[in-house]
Image 1 (spheres, rainbow, N blue to C red):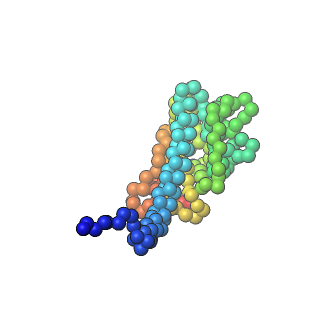
Image 2 (image 1 turned 120 degrees about the horizontal axis):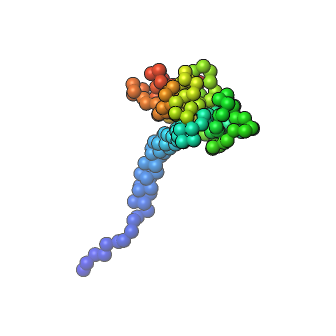
Image 3 (image 1 turned 90 degrees about the horizontal axis):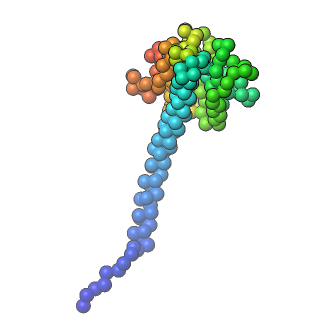
Amino acid sequence: MVKKIPYGFSIIELLITLSIASILVAFSIPALNTIYQKNKSATEINRYLSLITFARQTAVANGKYVSVCALDEFDICGQDWSNGVVIFSDDNVNGALDNNEDVYRIFERDSNTGFFTLNASLNSNYINFDPLGTSFRKNISGNLVYCSKVNSTENSRALIFSRSGRVYLAQDNNNNGIPENGSGEDISCG
C-alpha cells in the first residue's frame, strides 16, 4: 500500500516560517529607511539644480538678466530657501522681484521635509545670471545646501555655483559621507 503524502504545512512549520520572515523584515526596515532618506535628499537637491539651470538657460535664451531667490509668504525674495524659489527677469539688476518684471517660474515646497541654506559671497540672498549665462555680479559664488535635519549632515547635499554661472552637485571627495563646498570644506547643517 502506498502511503499518502500530506499537502500543505503543519502549524509548526507555518509559525517557524512566519517568525523567520518577521525577523528579516525587522532587520531590513532601517536599511530601507536609509535608502528612502538618501533618495529624498537627492530628489530635493536635483529639483533645485533643475530650477537654477532653467534660470541660467532662460537668461541666455531671452537675452535678459534673470535672478533666482527664496520664496516667502508674499512671493517676493526672502531669506528662507526651504519654502521654494521664484525665477524672474531682473531688469534693474537689484535681486528683488519688482512689479514690472516677468516671473518665469514659481516653485513652492513643503519646508517640513528638510531645509535649504544659501551660502553666497558678499552675503547675497539670491543667485543671478546675465544674458551670457554668467553671474551678473561677477564676484558672486557659493553653495546651496540641503539638510534633512537641523544640525545633521547625514544625507545632506549641496549645489555649488561659480562666477562663470556653472552650477553643479557637490561631491564627497574625501569619502567621509559629507559633500564638500566649492572651497573643499565639508558642508554644514547648523
